[in-house]
Length: 321
Image 1 (cartoon, rainbow, N blue to C red):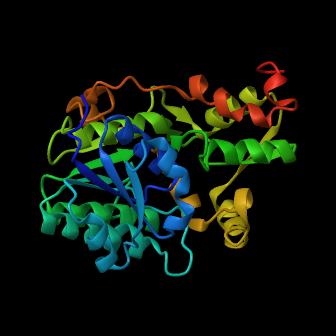
Image 2: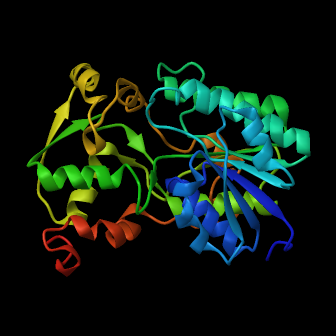
């Protein structure tokens, strides 16, 4: 059902990988969308996702409350997608995922807007990973402000612009050997379009107020199985060499300064030590994609539609060739 034409939703972090899919899903439901981003001049790619004037990028940095407040003015719902996979300067886990989440929640409460906050499966205040600890702290900060806030916890998200499947495919194109860290760690890869639909459903009011949803794909897979699937999709045979966590940590001390696909941080290695799957409690309470009536798409079904570019002859290569 289309949203009332005057319903405004403010989305923070809307220019990123998940953000552009959330913006598209909301635009299709006819919301007016204000996108709070640090560099609005670089967010022009979002506007063609909706009608003329429907999507408006504005300057907002969740480390600065006044900019967050200005971006939220007049909104009925506030969506926080802000998160980082590695730290850089002032963009620290603490600043973005904990204090930033608290700022967004407080601003939403001030204007009486509903809150949809995207966190991550694995958020744990007792984790040795700073990423996981600050995700948990951010959830706690949001709950302290608004007990009716809806929290979405996706597993590893994949899709056309991800830093997950594309990274391994890019490495496989260049190297005959791939290091395998946490080969037996279980994950539940979830398609970015399904996560975006879940967020849009929450904005629509279809999600349970005050609930925490865990979003996973249809299959639980080990890291080894995921990489093997990626290699099969791009038609490349590569040797997978298991890398013990101690050695992976040592390599990460240097690779955390590397560019692009070669980047690996000690915190990311720490995350790979723990399974990243939907809990039995969430399944029992139907706080999942299926509980929202969403049939999740599998990695095998979606990934070939964008990983074809890593095949030797691109789209002209048969799968597995």
